[in-house]
Length: 420
Image 1 (cartoon, rainbow, N blue to C red):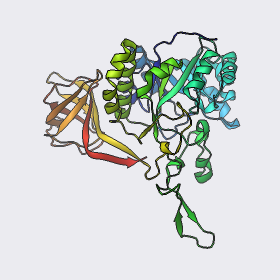
Image 2 (cartoon, helix red, strand yellow; image 1 turned 90 degrees about the horizontal axis):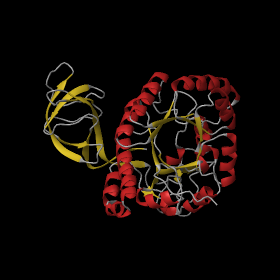
Image 3 (tube, rainbow, N blue to C red; image 1 turned 180 degrees about the horizontal axis):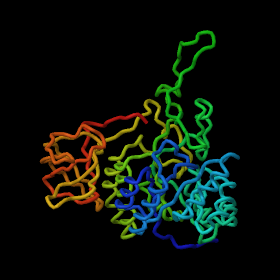
Image 4 (tube, one colour; image 1 turned 90 degrees about the vertical axis):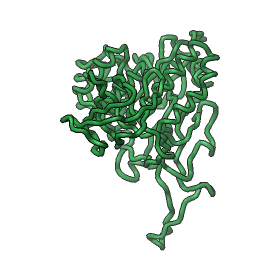
């Protein structure tokens, strides 16, 4: 029986770009996972060039944060030589771990860069303690649990694997309709293979039936009277159950979302960071702050929340039948890159706002500061009244002096809904 004492878990946060990686680091991540330009399961994400990866790793390590690189496709023969070259390149960049699901990819990584830890992806269907023991014997340091496991099952795994072996589990973000993410719908409908990183998310589509003799005449497909989005799951959220996650022996609490914005990553990282720290300071402090966690986590984009499989198998209440859209209560304006002697904040604009607007500075320490936009200037120093051009570099004067890495956002006029 493994009686290892529960320890403070790692907070593992996704990053789609160098900007988002830096945001994750500053807003509380212990580790960040990223994808390179090949061999990951998020081909539509921006992903990292080798140069960006090296810069991101350097930045993270300067803040005592680890970086893991995904290489978790289910490889075909034609992938293997490219994977060998890719791992040789990663050997020089020195991430802290590789996330792999395919045994062939695992063997190549062990051969080419044996000094880099290997974590086994959830795509490998890790549902029992024998699987964990198998991967440990092959040399894996960590295994990511299948999303289909309950906390009781994870506790059983913890009790039957070496104390040094690590369990990583998803605690927040989108849920996949397919077992351990092994979806075939995307490949069937569009020819884009989810297991090769090209998922089109057909689980979020609205379905209808066409009768053979009446082409073009569509009949709605109803789960029941609620609606026609049959496979559309709610998002996972375990912010209210940090004690249970710790007690189960999970070493790394993983956030889903390698295609998400800096606003999403900042909100989730900051909220889970505070919840974890509060719990390890005092469970009563954690309980007292539950309302704050709930309020802050709702400021991310989300599709309503569920606890997934952690407390038993999901039922019809974990699905959303009438819509495939996100709820978004805040709009991301930009992140403060630097502050000059005048107190003006340099930033790259993400969404439009104007002089005179009231916005919010979201600070890494947990504070939210409402402030007014007093003036705005373009890169040439010319005064402007608004910033209508995406990715424009601007300088803004605010009523309250900002700090570098403050994230600027504005509350939406009602919930803004965007396509999933």
